[in-house]
Length: 367
Image (cartoon, rainbow, N blue to C red; front, side):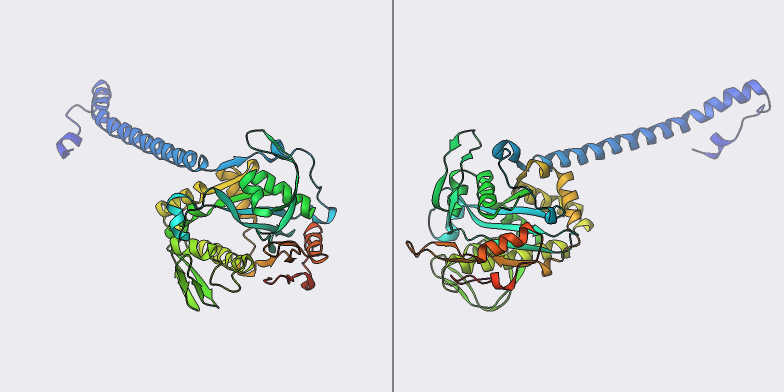
C-alpha cells in the first residue's frame, strides 16, 4: 500500500467524510486480517485433522483381546501383599511361513509363541523382574475358549508353546495363571516379524556376545564382542538355538532376555521426541506388531502405562528362567522343578524378591 493511499484526503475533518473514508481505508486491512485468520484456521484444522488421522491410524494398528470375555471369573485373586504390583504376560509370537522361513533355512508353518515372560512390576514401579517360561515345558492346559467362541477341553502334559498355536494368547495367559497362581493384569503380544521393522527404524540394537554363535542350520554366526544388529540379524539372534551353548531352548532364552533389555534401553536412549516423523514411523511399527488386552489397546492407555513404568531402569531389569528339569519320560522336554518353581511364583504372588536358591534350573540355564 503506497503512502498516498495511507494519507487522508482533504476534508477529513468533516464527520461524514471521515466515516466514509474510514470504511474505505480499512476494508483492505480487514480483508487481509480475515484471510490471515481463515488461513490460520485452515492450518489448525488441517494440523488437527492430520494429528487425529495419525492417532486413529496408530490406534487402529493395535489388536485387542477381551480377557474378561475369554477367561470369565475363574481366575486367581491378587494377594493382599501384591495389590499394588502389576503382572504382565509378554509373548513373542512368531510366524515362520513365507519370507520369514528364509531366516531359519526352511519352511515352518503356522505361528507359535517362542517367548513367554511374566513381568512382575513391584509396588512403587521402580523394580521389575521378568520370569521366562521355557517353550518346551510340559504343562496342564485348562479348559479354554478360542476367539471364535469354540470350547477347548483341558489337556495334560502338553508343550507350553503349543497352547498359543492351538488355542491362542488368552488361553496361554489362563495356563500361566493356572500353573503359577499369579493373577495376570495385562497381556502384551509382540509379533517378531513386525519388530524387525522397529529395530531398523531405531538404527539397530547393540548386544554384547560372550560366547560365539555358530548356527550352521540357520547360517547365523557372531563372534564374541559387541555387535550392532539390524532387524534381520536381531530376529536371528532371538531365534537361534543351534550352535549356541548346549543348543537347547534354555540357551536361547538367555539371548532373548539379553536382547529385550538392550531393546528397551535403545528406545529410552534415543531422543525420539526430536524427530516427530521418525517417532511416528517407530510408533507405527510398534503398534502394528502389538496385541494387548482391551484395557491397554489404545495409544492413550499405552502412553499412561509407559509413563507409570518410567522409574524402572532397563539395565536393572531382573531376568530369571523358571526352574525346570528334564522330563523322565521324554528327555527332549522339561517340567517345572519343584519346589524351586513354586518359590518363584510365590515370590511374585506376594511382591517379594525371588530367592537366590530358585534362580538355577536343574536342567541348565538360569538367570
